[in-house]
Amino acid sequence: MNPRIAAVEYQSPYKLILTFTNKEVKEFDFSDYLSYPVYQGLKDEGYCSKARVFNGTVIWDEFTDFDPDTLYLESKPLIVA
Image (cartoon, rainbow, N blue to C red; front, side):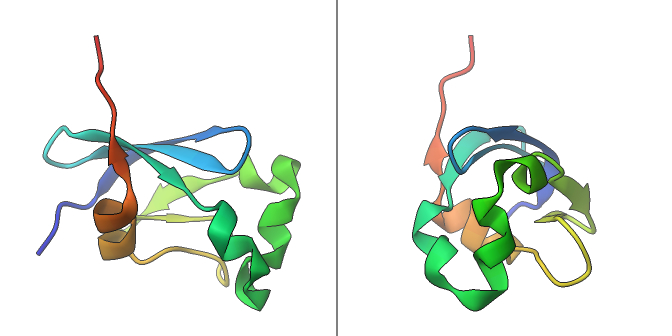
């Protein structure tokens, strides 16, 4: 099982800075997902900024979230100073 999300920060445009439970910090660009109907609401950056952690993943409401494994596997490592 991949690490889960411990913290999230929205970064414009359409990116999340994710801190995982193993202390890795990665960037997830979700712009490619905006064409899917379930993610249409994320085109509104005001809505995007409401991202929060719930049960080890990122959610916006009860209908909009990402699989935590997708977040881990498709994000790019960031170097934190």
